[in-house]
Amino acid sequence: MVNIRRKTINGNNYYYLEHSFRQDKKIKKREIYLGNKIPENIDKIKKEFINNIYKEKWHNKLNYIKKEFSQEIKFTPKSAREKELENFMVKFTYNTQRIEGSKLTLKETANLLEKGISPKEKPLRDVKEAEAHKKLFYEMLDYKKDLSLTIILYWHKILFNETKPDIAGKMRTHGVSISGSKFIPPSPVELNLLIEEFFIWYKKNKDKIHSVELAALVHLKFVTIHPFSDGNGRISRIMMNFILNKNNYPMFNIIYENRNSYYNALERSQIKKNDFIFIHWFIKKYILENKIKKK
Image (cartoon, rainbow, N blue to C red; front, side, top):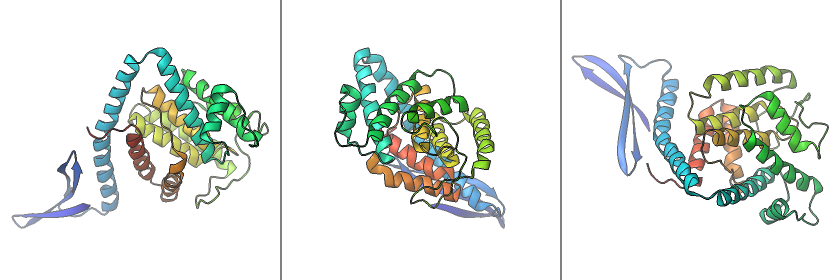
């Protein structure tokens, strides 16, 4: 809870914003001075104040995750590391495809991508797109340059070249809606400007924002622009993991079973135009997946 506290000294009032929270089994308190009167933009100040507290709390945990991950890589044999990467690829492919409606089970996805065994009586499109996603994942890992529209269009083409060649690698020229969501994506005439603004924002902030927060924001901002007829979620999750991998953080697998909270966090951020809602969800899940309890 964020509270406004008033101090009266020699008949003069002074206002402070304060917040108490639990961290490492201890109660900590933060406060900032507001002035001799409550500012008109107090709601904005409250939001920035609480956001900064959370970021301070999270950054220590996220940096610890990076440190532990680097140590793990250092002492893991190459062959074992490659197997772990393959395991992640299978689970990531299963979940990101399943979120978008794929009928393949995790076991079927593993058999397909590890052994080349196609499942029976499952949509051919799901099979082809799972195989394409595997190729896309490894292409993303091997890509040494930075994000650009050219590489994103190329990644999209890899994903849909066999199943939807009419849209593969192309930005949409028509309106779209998101099933079950109150958020309405931008019209096609807005896309070029929004994409241009996205890359201006990215280049300006990529070295200023914490890498995990940057991954969350890249995902949120790109999927909000929704530049493709299909595959916006999958491409944004590939971009998310490109950022994490590029900055030596473990990649993130958004679990299919968590899709309702995932959708809700995205939609609330989009409707309220409040990035922190999704950042909050993302980082909490990321820390939980990496099983960091303290520090």
